[in-house]
Image 1 (spheres, rainbow, N blue to C red):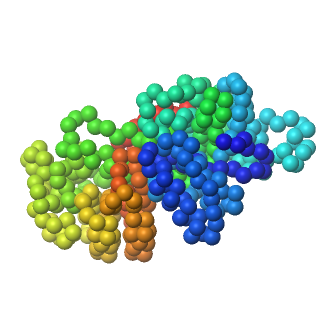
Image 2 (image 1 turned 90 degrees about the horizontal axis):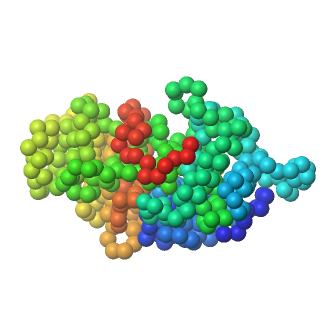
Image 3 (image 1 turned 30 degrees about the horizontal axis):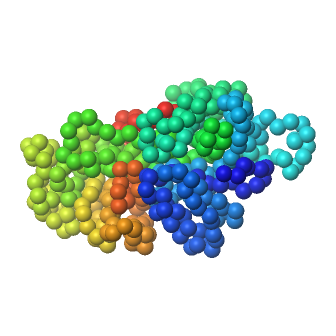
Length: 416
């Protein structure tokens, strides 16, 4: 990639599930066109998309459905050694390390770097996280090329920032910082690095749900369960809960699982201590059928109502669904439950037919949910295939925050 010059264009980088790069590119181009502009998007590596936005069409916190992580307003630097790459990153992002002649030359003083430097100076202690990345991580490779070098660069950057910015030092109290900053560095080759620094935007509904994701590098959460599960689909639900950063209240929340067979999603909710009403035409895994905390109702997921299981509006109710259906049916399901105000939180997959997603129906469903007074975020997670996951929550809800690390763990180490 071309190297960044002071006050020059800064590209965006997005990560996605590999093989879905062109879907993400189509989504980004679609957004730009709708907003009267044009961007140039391409995929330099599997699972990574670079966007040149010279006209400033994309907002800093643009959150595409098919993106797992964002590196907004990135800089591209080059140097030979680990220490010199680290210095170049800090200089390009924060204007640290320029000589006096550069300071007096306005053309060499980057305005964004100056602004970020001043803001990070006043940021709370413990609010800065550093993620060191390499392209192979985008495919969840266990030992990607250049990871050791990337880690060493991250350690050097952490040392430098701790000397200058309290945000990089350990928090003085056990209370979580009210703001979160994320510095990401991705090696493109041993001597070329892409870096981004941003104060993350809170997405909710949980207190630790931010974009970009400051907890999981590249937005990848490890959500494997060692014990045998009824199906591997459980990972999608766990990624959804991990993204929302909220949890059902054990023994207080009733979960309705629509299209529950064979029971992968029901199993996750049972592990979280919930009573589950599982609705399907076919029975669940025998272990779940014998569980006293699982009520199986033989029936149609699209006509079921909570009152059929004795659930009233005073109870905290979640609805989850991984049912196979056309996208329009998923929209109808979300509309029924939102109109009825039957659930405080919902996690639902919308499945697509053929090779391409129906982005028009996806947009329609989002508008329906938002029009009915719910917050709505949609993601294509690493464990999603030709489908996306809707995460729906009440605007005035009082959810239980998910403890960091209690459900999904980081797939790759965090430097700071």
